[in-house]
Length: 61
Image 1 (cartoon, rainbow, N blue to C red):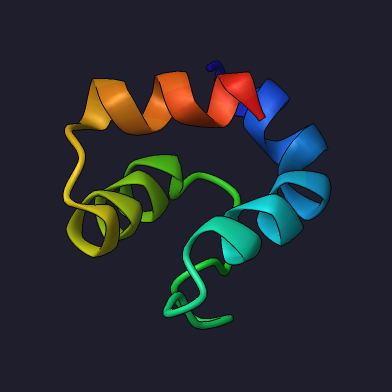
Image 2 (image 1 turned 60 degrees about the vertical axis):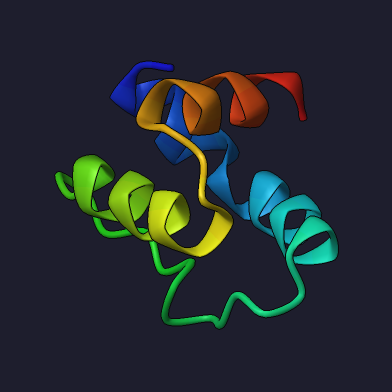
């Protein structure tokens, strides 16, 4: 998922991510431009998935 794609869809995806993982906080899901890797890292920690699994999961939402 490229950075522009993540940025453009993040508000929509964030709701779906919260439904799947209710323990994620708004801080965990805060998108900051240029910090895509940081966001993916937080999702990895919270979900226990690899980076590639997180990216594939987000693409499937």
